[in-house]
Every structure is written in C-alpha cells, then in structure tokens.
Length: 180
Image 1 (cartoon, rainbow, N blue to C red):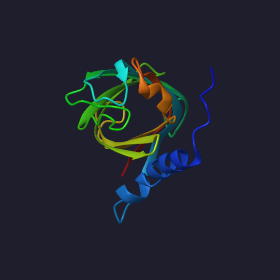
Image 2 (image 1 turned 60 degrees about the vertical axis):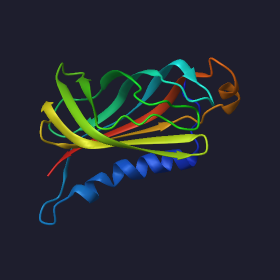
Image 3 (image 1 turned 180 degrees about the horizontal axis):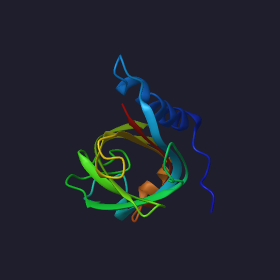
C-alpha cells in the first residue's frame, strides 16, 4: 500500500536536514565523501496507542531503505528494526523522544552497521520530523557520520479522541552516511 502524500513542509524539513549534513560536518580542508544515501519508508506501532491522554507506550519501528546509492560498495537497500519502552508518558500532543539511541542497519550485502545517535523531534501541528545525527560505531562504514531523518504522516487527530487512538504511523525516511 503506498504511503499517503506527506505535507510539503515535512518533506522539505526532512530533505534539508539530510542534505545539510555534508555541509555541517565537512572540515574546512576536506570535503565529505558520501558513502551511501538511502530513501525508504517506515512504520511505527504504538501500544496501547496514542491518544490525547499521556500514557506510557511500547514502540516498535521497522524501516525499509528501498533505494540506496553508494560509492565503492554494493549497497542498494537495507532494513532496520527497533523496539523500546517509553520512559515518560507520551500522547498525540507530546511525542516520545528516544535520545541517545542506536539502531542496527542490515544491508543487502549481508553486512550490518550500528548507528549510535542523538535525536531531535520537531512537531508542527500534526506533523512530526525526527532527526537522528551520530556515528556508525561498528560494522560496515564504522567511523563514518550518519543522519537519519524520518518525516511522519500527519496525525489523524480524530483518532486521538478515544482509545485505542493512533496504533501505527507511516513515514518517509532518508539516511545519509558520510566520511571526511
């Protein structure tokens, strides 16, 4: 099932965050080298579900990078899955921020990359953009800098009115891995 179109503001914010990484992380005497750039989509599930009433949630996220371009390697796609228990109450109005965090990316080559990051959440009305910036700490691309931006579909606030509320949410994801 195709993803619903995300608002232009969310897509623009996601693209700007990923595309500005190489500008921000470049040392004055060296240009950053793009190792791999991926786009894809993800689904996050919430249990018991997000409503307007703050509750502790269990989260599970599956990301599929369906289109990757890389330099000097055979990476063309990848996946990652993560789950976590919220340590503070979250709701439709106050999204969970997991930071610092980590995820293991499984590449089509059979290799993996462990991405350790700090995250920020930008909430504008019903739109949520999560930006994770950090380092590949082990596996393929170890030592490289990475940015993973997730632009979530807008919340259907009518679903927030009664339980179970929002139990899953789709997003568009972009990943950029660079080295200096």
